[in-house]
Amino acid sequence: PKVWETFYSQRFLVCDGKGDIRGCNIRELKDLNKLKGYLLVERLEEGRVKVIDAKDAHLKEKHELIGVELDFKVGKNDMVGCASEQKGLLEALEPPHGIESLAICDNKGERPVWYLDTNYVELQTLRLQCFPLWATVIGIKSLEKLEVNTCPTLCELPSMPMLKSLKIRSYDGLNTIGDFPNLDWLQVEGCGSLEQLSHGMPALKWLDVYGCYKLKTLANMPALEWLEVRYCERLEQVADVHMPD
Image 1 (cartoon, rainbow, N blue to C red):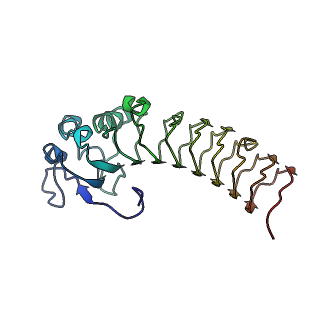
Image 2 (spheres, rainbow, N blue to C red):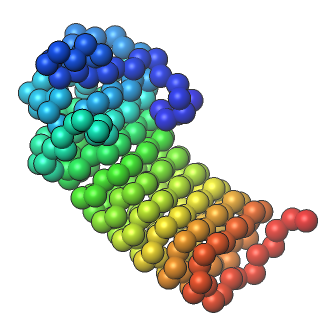
């Protein structure tokens, strides 16, 4: 199972230390270096977690984990931290290099330095949700599944040779999609600046495009078996598509 498919070996709820008994201080992860499987850390919003405590969690040292999800979603009674504070928290919660799955949700800061690290050679599945300040997605060579949701300042997706599944939603700044020679599943929704899809998708079998108002052309996709296009008013040209009966 992937990190967002409702399966976790451990679910860690963070408390604020002010009478909140529904969780633990993030520091309590410090000595749990034998954690295995998938770890979900919830309630990381500002005011509940200090950067110094997040560093003491030593998440990077949990080498037996294969999946991590970090959830910064703000509850109705919680305050939203500033961008620099949220970046500091995410920077401090660097995942171990051997993970296969990573999901990060609702972080208002810029991308952390560790995200540029080329040592995540085992990473196969990545989900990024609600990142208003991230400008690019790094091309991770080992990645097979990518989901990007509500990241308005991102403007391109680089080529990833092993990628098989790609889901993009509310990606307003996207104007370029790189070549994905092994991609067989693609869903694009609410990408208002996208004008065309790459020609470099020879293995694509399943394509769903919704609400891409500037999309003008669909390139030839020789392996396509299923196609759905909705609310793409400017679409002028669809290349020959040979789908099975």
